[in-house]
Image (cartoon, rainbow, N blue to C red):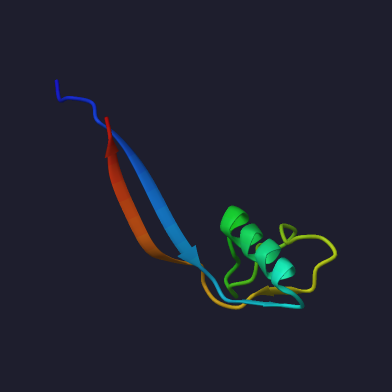
Length: 71
């Protein structure tokens, strides 16, 4: 039987956002990261933050992945 090994994986993602403030942009991006996007690259319907104007305007993209073995 092969030895079981443990790893920590870190993923860095980015998305472009149209918003009224940096705080709103963070909330919108977090919703897109957590809930995904529709075919127009907007946050999935019903999953955007409440009382915030704006939306994502690009596809969420993975820009970096890092794997570290943990002992």
